[in-house]
Image (cartoon, helix red, strand yellow):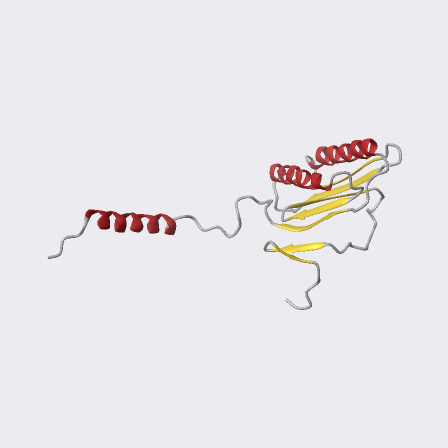
Length: 162
């Protein structure tokens, strides 16, 4: 009978253990971070006329949206200080708890900060979305074409077929 080397035996045992550990991990259909799937993001190419007022209005509008979102899954707000007025809108999907809704909103706000002092922008994730503009867009039917993402793949053109 052939004698097995101790290091070979340990290698096979370790490999078997790793395979068992990998096979017993729970399978998830979605990542545990519910905010992870980005559908669309847009930042206006135009900046506000007065950075101080624009920044203050964006912050006031976003704070007001957050406050209102604690009671509903949909909120609108506006700040009309001087010339750089801001209108905002946010919503969470119906299946999202209040705590997850607020967490998603907070996550979206952090991501929207990359727009800097743009006078408009929006971001759409799985569970929630935010939009702000320097005009009243609430009754606007036209939807801007922007970058769409599906499974983290970008597309700026609309697909003709599924």
